[in-house]
Length: 391
Ligand code: CMC
Image 1 (cartoon, protein in one colour):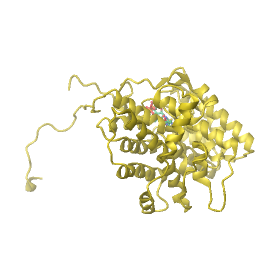
Image 2 (cartoon, rainbow, N blue to C red):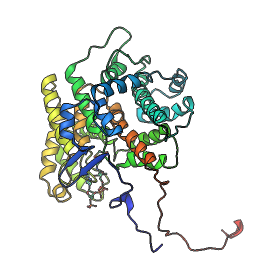
Image 3 (cartoon, protein in one colour):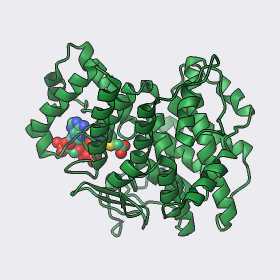
Image 4 (cartoon, rainbow, N blue to C red):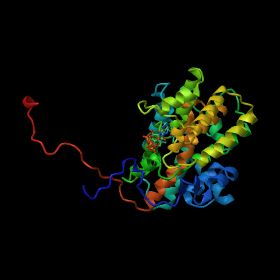
């Protein structure tokens, strides 16, 4: 074991070389393919950024139109998938259903993609981009008992997300431009984040040459955890708990500081960002704008503000470089946009999809070896087998 370096949580280990996302945790810098996240969030649309992340360059108008059209060709989900959804209990968590349905796509698309064939690779990418959006929204319609609906090929991708989620059989869904723009921006901010837990999972699973859909499905499962993407739901639930408890933010800050209590302030801290999370800055501003534009006055927001102000001054959080992360604000803004709490992490997954796809593609194109870490064995030395009577 002498040659094995132990690094639990891979805090200091690079797992690959990547040309997709640049992140400087000290300076709070995030760039996709060299473009600053701030510029992309303010000037581009989600599919444009998806194209950039997956294929390496910002698309021309023609390339973007083709990409969107090619995705549209794959937005019909096999009708038998509806039977699978029917089999879930109504209260099943949308992330569990999404992970299962994403893996179930393999049953209807069994052809193994030859990654050296550019057309096959491109088709698989368009397929997952199209079908994932539809099944992601179906997980919500299932929980509220709405009939499952279809992608409208005359409407853009992100607008389709809103329609697919909220359109009722009784009439067309009226899109609010403020809500649409905010969601587009949120998807962009979540689109990639180098070797985070879910992305590393996608690369690891894909490294055994498991297919794209199976790899993405495992990424959804990894994202679900409250220390990763599930934090956005956990933040809102924590704020609601503080509200129910009488609204005393201090009490929860003290609880988070107590080393004998496993409770953590959800939406605080980050493995890599040690000064601030640039995505949180953009979202905080977007949240303020959207709340003002929509005229939302929500007591939960005051609790969030109090918590943020107090924690930022508290020696425990300051000394450990714990700042609000992207999930602290994303839950607040999703709530203001009318997205149900259980769907927050699904929103993260829809946004992260192009990142997972790009990282899977890069890993396969770079012909990376199977991911197979070592360990340091700390168990028993060789023992003699004991018969049943001897135990
Ligand atoms: N509340 C209270 N204490 C905390 C928190 C928190 N949210 N986060 C970290 N700490 C403490 C931790 O107890 C440890 O203290 P000590 O040194 O005394 O033992 C110290 O800060 C360092 O924490 P760590 O667990 O070693 O740090 P990590 O890099 O392994 O964990 C994290 C990073 C994001 C998992 C963690 O900060 C956390 O659990 N945060 C809450 C969950 C959350 O908001 N997650 C979303 C992350 S951003 C979105 C995404 O990328 O998914």
